[in-house]
Length: 292
Image 1 (cartoon, rainbow, N blue to C red):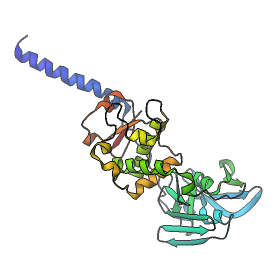
Image 2 (image 1 turned 90 degrees about the vertical axis):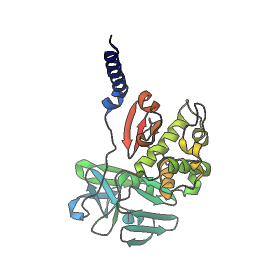
Image 3 (image 1 turned 180 degrees about the horizontal axis):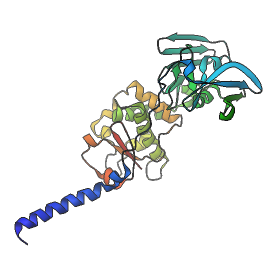
Image 4 (image 1 turned 90 degrees about the horizontal axis):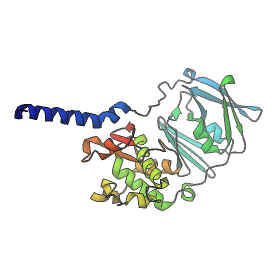
């Protein structure tokens, strides 16, 4: 074969080989997590829900925002004790003996007694001035059994309102320290869901038999070389950004974007594409691609 044709053939072969390596990622497509919002804050824009405590109907109106049932948090707290409520702009706080709650309209989490309860559906201050939270968050806040019956647009509560234990009694300090540090070092500036996903990778590895069984062990694992760039460059020791601590607490509460994600990387900063070419692609959040 003439040398010129041989060079052309080699180039075509190289291009086909690279394309073949990329096929798994191309076939998987860009899966991104859905974004939820409350676009209309008018109370009348959302279907009312009847709320009962046992068989007794309460003077409390829930709302169906999209397909998600919401309850007014101040009225929920009144089932427990008289509360002091402060509402300034989009910031909102509630205080009662043994109960401290803070939230911001549009945020996807509620801070309760130093803990963080996350739901991808954001909390919302509607036009009546009350702050509404999704049902799953209401369950965590109250400790009550809460059942939504779509057929009759009704929510039924049972049991006693039991304030959540404080964060100091729930979070292991070493686990929170290292998880917040690695989340901040790896994903500072990423959306909250992306920071949670990074934390999920760490905890998924802790649960996997293929990795060490502690958060510290996973972060500093050197079995196949340094696993995380911040360990190599020392940024893992920098004080975490506050939202990364929020993300770490959410992960430690058990919330997971994915219980399968074990790897992630940022394509624009990557020096190796081993993950892309060897692990099944799951989804993308912000600048990070996640793999099982």
